[in-house]
Length: 471
Image 1 (tube, rainbow, N blue to C red):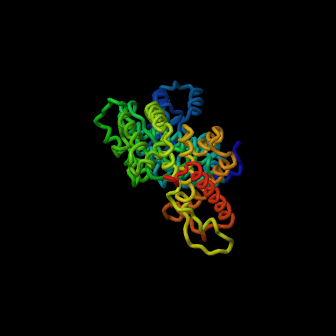
Image 2 (spheres, rainbow, N blue to C red):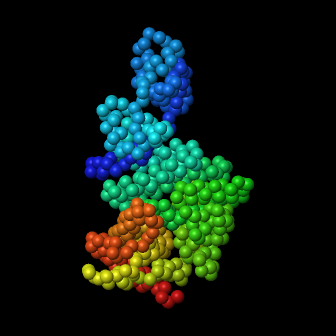
Image 3 (cartoon, one colour):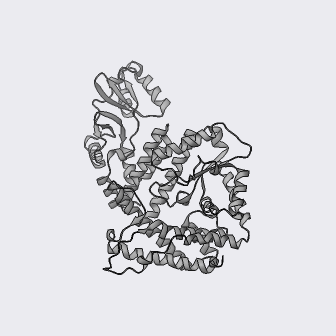
């Protein structure tokens, strides 16, 4: 059941442009009703804007009901005779509450949305009510209805606004991440279908990896994606489609990955057989980047195409590991690559400390990598960190108390990072991962210090469990 306080806050802060505004369909006022109804049926619509000279009105199925009661046959009635003029309008930057008030006051179910004088579309009462109750549903509608990359870009921006509304409404970060992950997956799937030939989509598997694959990403981050091609399949447009996909994502706000972990890089765009050899090299070879590249792949989730291609590679990877304890130890040791924040662990009230803390490197990454290593050791197929923790406890691979504390620490760090990133974006600054002591209140510092202490416990457990100090 939704929280009325959250719905009220959404109404107060949201703008009409944040809701799902449908593209209008406009007809000439001289169109007869039979022709108009035929056009609406072909398009699956129940209403249309009516342009009659300088006048702009609206025709709905309610008007059709009233028209059928008139003595003239529908084929002889022009839509201008039964449409309502003028159509009630609202500005795109108006508050959602104002739109709802206009609908109630004038007893209408649709409003024309304008940006200045420019027509943006039509806002329906059901869409408005749904917006208050379920923002993510509307973003999903926009994604599914997008007929072009430009329309999909508008849906991507809608997700950004939705995140800010959810955070302001007090929705827990894990729920935000879950919803955003689902929407991003649908966004990537729809984009791939728009930029890639259908034959290529059917004979490949598009992957997202990293925090996106784990379902722990909230705000947009660097692109982490890959493509598995069916053995023996070739298409002349594959590389160009990959370039279009990456360029569109960059335009949507997903910056290119500095390490080029993207479908545009041939290393991350291979047939199944080549992927199998690459995984073998990452596990058994001596490439210094192998463990981290493998870690990225371990979080892969299929978002478009044939998911069975990924399933086969995951099974192959499980067979490669076997009892390679030495490799697992080297893999787990990556959790130690960033120094422990001792200056934060020893923080005392009133102490002045200007050294920043990187929430990702010194907090989130050790949890993610440590749990990922344990999941590989115990053949856990889940990709999300929380799901991996739960599976590890069930398999006897991790103490339940430590798993619970790690889950709480993960969510606390994600929440704190999201709050500070949204504050930075609102101030026109880049959304980073660092926080400064002076920027934190007491109610933020204490839980943060407790979370870092949990990370310290995990590091100690990993050192003892994998014995990577002996490598």
